[in-house]
Length: 113
Image 1 (cartoon, one colour):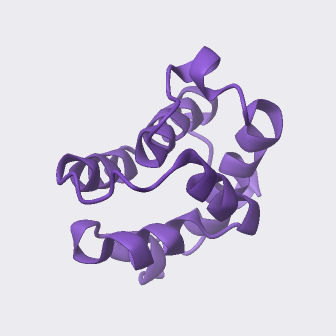
Image 2 (cartoon, one colour):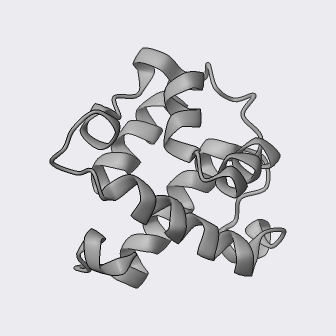
């Protein structure tokens, strides 16, 4: 999970993805395709191969997408009040990934589905 934060943060730091809005991220979350959205949008600026191309963490993608959908279902539209984010979609992903860590630390991906 922290690796996800590092990768998103690195892409954010390039300033090439400031156009990714919260609405863009909401759409990817609703479709259950956030990791694929990041890979397609950010290309070589994010390395998600550990999660998308590896059997070692094959359970991570559905687990992560479900956790994001859970947060979306409860808090979409309240990002500013809850996390202080109102403009940048990548900042929202960092905040929500951090929230997942805080809520679910130590849960096995396969068992959490």
